[in-house]
Amino acid sequence: MDARDAGDVNTPDREPTSRATAPAPDTAADEPYAMCVLCGEPTEYPESTKGITLCPVCEWREAERTACSG
Image (cartoon, rainbow, N blue to C red):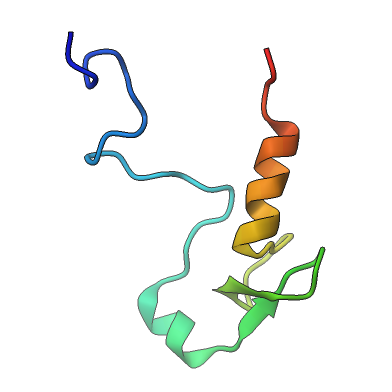
């Protein structure tokens, strides 16, 4: 059985998803980056992004914390 048939999420034809949507390329270049609400490091999102903005490290830790363990 091929890994793609098994629903493997690590296949190259699938991209990971995140809670926040990535900004459009033209807006990201014009605005400064928002700061992470947990650690204060810069995020990948512009300051105009609504909601809680997390840096990649904190976003990963939050995903680990809220993931189903069973």
